[in-house]
Each structure stands twice: as structure tokens, then as C-alpha cells.
Length: 466
Picture 1 (spheres, one colour):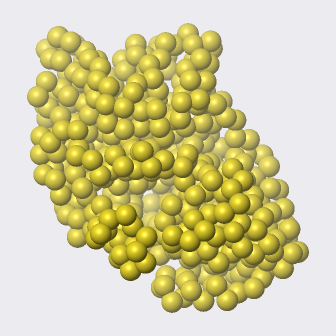
Picture 2 (cartoon, rainbow, N blue to C red):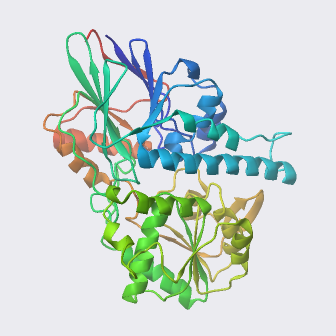
Picture 3 (cartoon, rainbow, N blue to C red):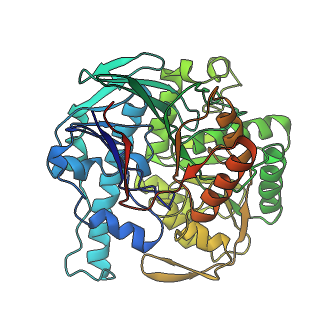
């Protein structure tokens, strides 16, 4: 039996997570994400898939974020018809995220056609709502800690990764004629002291490890999160402005709501209205009650006055009409909207209206990938192009360090120390070049690990004749 891997994404970049495992004639795709950020990466979403999707037997998902799942509708549209495995929360999140992404794709194509700012005569969406819906019948649940036997020679077990609700570390056992081999995909690892989610599970053994390296060159201290967030909001309040928080609908919005509720209860920030302007975030927040055993907020959700997702100062805005009314508010409010990197969604019209106002503030609360609007704003650009128009940036810009849902450098190293014996091969993925190189050097110095930094579309033979 021979086992190979081909890197179809998340190699040399943070996004587009796609890894093709070939076990003899069996083809398994681990994650199926969209490329985001730099234009050269985004263009890959429109290219032909490197292999015929109809040849792929199954897909494993580590978690629901679009850079890990967003290509599924296109994969199915182009001929994939096998099962798609993920944890139960992941599968529910996938349905929410893909429907939203399809809707946004359709809206952006229509708007580009109407305004005439697309280079294409008739701009088309990458995929539609209908394309997204074709994915759902293929979804198959995996539960944490349960070994699932697939295709005879293949067993897969999902373990908690933290990061977002339902995120998994995947352990894949391959049984050959002579020996068994273990491959582990870390997925995106979460923080070790997250206020909502449990820390990533340590894995004792594996032969081959695929390790994320998003923050391989950064320490994200979480001890000052509350004070940083409180200062940014109080300063904006004193200026008579609005605090706008671009936030991912999955995970980050719920964490921000947790902190804002706590800060208001403690009197650290004024008890002003909080508006969640994201239908997707509203739907996702409901899942935290349904899957209470996946996190440690359970007791808070059932006690009056303690639930960070339900209190008098918190308002959920689902409709477009309600969203537009927020443009008329002049001060004393907090608006949370997606997407977190300002690449699309309702946050764009809030930025369009708020960036030129020097009394308002934009508070970034997570990683901003290279090439995104969020990254450009943080890097000090004086203008931001939205809807084909250059918008002046006069609002105060803040970045709250330590709020990322990714394990930082120290936590990545700590997780790696959990292996009783080092993996025979470790591939560093899902990171920008500097982060990956720094982590590779540290793993060599501290744990004597030799790592591989794969390139896009590069292939490796993992096992031969097992």
C-alpha cells in the first residue's frame, strides 16, 4: 500500500485549506476551503480544481470556517458526490456559512453588475445558494473520541481542537498489509485558556503530522484583552462616537459578546446598546445552547443575568432594513458585524459610513490576512475601497491583541510537546512564510523536530509498501 499527499492549499499561505491524501486508489480530501486575501490567491478559487472532483471518494472537515469549507459547493457542482465528514456542530455551521456565502456571492455579482465596477461584462458568483444546498445531503457526522471505520483500511477519530465550536483534530489510521500508520491533521488549534471553549486535546503518537502555523511567530497574551477592549470602547464613548467591531460570525462574535457583557456587568464600560448586525451570527449563537457540552459556558446560559447572549442591552438585527437604520445612530452604541476581515458582508456598509467619521472607531478583534481590507486599514492606509469607491479613513483604528482563536507560538509548542515520541515527518501548513519559518526553527531548537514547509501543488510520498 502506498500513501501520498498533494498540497492543494494552505501551503505558504493561511487560507485555502485543501490536502489530498491518496491511499492507493482511494482519494481523500482533508478540508475544502476558499482562498482569501491577496488577489493572486483568490484567483485560485476560479481555476479548475487540480484533479477531477468526481474522482475524490470522501472529504474530511476539521472545522466550518470558509477557508476550510467554502469550496465545497463548487466541488459538488463539478462532480464530487461522496460523503463529507465532520463533527455535528461543524456540519450545522457548514450549512449556515455556505448558505450565507452563496447569498453574498449572488449579491456581490448583482451589485457589481449594477454599479459597473467589475472587469467582467456579466459578473457571476463563484457559487449560488442552490449550489450550497447541494452539499447538505452529503454531510455525515463524526463525534469526538469515536473511531469510525471507513473504506476498510481507513479509520478516523476526531478530537477537540478548540478554535471554534466543533473544531476537530483528525487522527487517521491507515492499515496496510504489514503495519498501521497514523496521520494527524491539527486543523486550526485554539487557545489553551479560552473563556468559552476547551483547550486542544493532546495526541500521544503519530507518524505524520500536518501542523497549522498561523501564529508561529507571535505570542498573543490574553491577560490584557478586557482592559484593551474597555479602553477602546470608553474612548469612543467619550468622543461621542460609535464603536464598530468587524467580527467573524462563528466564534469571535460570541467571544466578544462574552467580554462586553462581563465589562458592562463590572462597570468597566457604559451600559450602552450592543447591536449584532449579522443574521449568520444570530443563527450561530443559538448553536451554543444546543451544543452546551462542547464548551464550558453551559451554566451561564441558564442563569438570569449571566447569559452573555441574551440581556436587555443586546439587540440582534436580522433584516437588511434594520441594518440600514444603524447608519442614523450618532453615538453611544457598539455595532458588531461580519465579516471579520472586512472582505464582504454587512460590515462593508458600516465601514463605508463610519470610516470617514473621526468620532467613531473601528476595533479589529482578530487576525487580518494579507491583502484583506482589514489588514490594509490596520497597516495605516488612508483610504479604503468599498463598493468601487475610495472611502477616507478618519475613524480611530484599534487592534485588540490576544483575541485570536488560534493557538499562539507558545501554545503551538506546548501542544507539540504533548507527543510522547516525535512524528517522523511534520508538515507546517496554514501560515504565512515568516510564521512558518519561525515555528520551524523553534521546533528544531526546542524539540529537535525536522519540519517540511510545502509549496502549493507540491506532492510527497508518505508511506510506501506498508
